[in-house]
Length: 146
Image 1 (cartoon, rainbow, N blue to C red):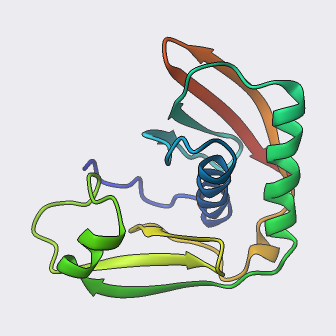
Image 2: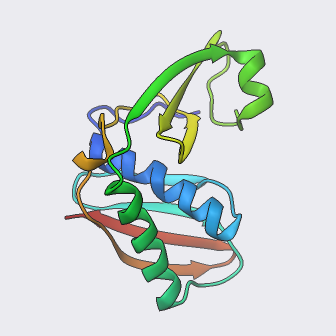
């Protein structure tokens, strides 16, 4: 796993977690396999089979903003590698980890992560998809926070 970029924006990173869980719930496509998280705009790439419709983009935005407006707390916990193997995809976790950090967003999302996050979804702001495109099995979603 590549090292996470230092000083990553906690608001944008937390929004990425919510986007990932929303994509899982709406399309059963799994978490993004690649992400570029920046303060002004970010992008996530998903294994997918088509482009999104305008209606689907609005549905994704609405669901993410609903979760953000739910004022969910973000918490983390450390669990053993053995326990993590039964509950999470560990492909992106560095080898040699004895304890694995799990970041939870209320009861909406839980995943392994080493990054910084907000303490409550109310700190994130409004989520907006700037654009999306599909090419050769990859759906890219670009987003910003307002």
